[in-house]
Length: 446
Ligand code: GLU
Image (cartoon, rainbow, N blue to C red; front, side, top):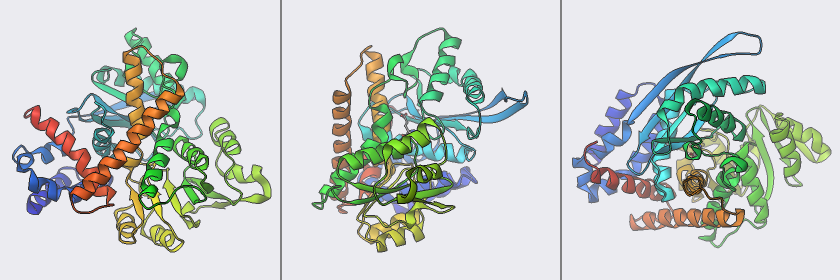
């Protein structure tokens, strides 16, 4: 079976040259699948792996827009509709200069497994653009979103493909995207996009869900060793939506969060991160995280051009971006007494960093399990839209907590069943894969 896996992997790498992050995501999943194929030769006979690695549809389009100086700008837009065996394609849009096909495909591939893990009826997809919103005026970002949707609208729909946010796409951008969709189609189709504002079809808890869910997953994982967040020293990377809500939930559970970051540097605040100040700086004024240290005065300090993983921590929550924590960082964290790490971002650890944590016995939760609360709550938003209902915060948060507990337990049980208890990578990959693979078998060669 190993030979079979290696042959397919080789094919996938050769068919998708230069897509480094996609190669990384596929390789990591394949490393878990040997025993599943051994037990289920029907997956091999039906070429499930080959089909899983080939997106059902890949759309690349031009996004022209005019900047504030009247200059015409061109960006590239993407939507990769990866797998719809379990439901309509579902996944976010990322606006960041690093976006190219390989990034969108890695994210889309991860999304297929993540969405399967949520237990909700959603397939996997991802999209975005190499547009850089940093330093752009609100008017420029709005015109970009409108131009992006002017092409994307023909590919999406409640039963087809349901985008949402990701890096560079928050509630503001979702509003402009949805507004343009509504204008072009002349239909108020709430279920076409998620992450909407609560006054116009959005769900309570969607904003908080990814960060909250990551911490809830970590809490349950810590409990397997009789540990909890109470009194734990926590380091978080990033300071966007996922990071802010991870900090909020970790603090609510008694965690002592001492650091967070942005792409320019990190801040350490031994008194504990003051969320009110952080929110004002990052969400309201959209300033770099360095400003947090300035406003907090003596207690906090800013370290430019360095990664937050220099900070000692018992729990680490990478909530920034892919490959933001490498082997050297992992080694240092382990030496500083790291007990657990849960990924709020998608694929934030390099494969070498993952291997190091696992061999050091650190509890490690991969993003496709730990950060699935965001997309799961998107599916709850779709449920509310379909029934023209709006649930309370408490009810929705309870649903999220239930989903995260189930994902955790399913991963843990699968890891045990396959003879490697505590290996959440194995558990997540096998659980996510099996559900999609069975649906693909049932639906025939399509
Ligand atoms: N971009 C988020 C993720 O990585 C959320 C996607 C969604 O809600 O559709 O899972």
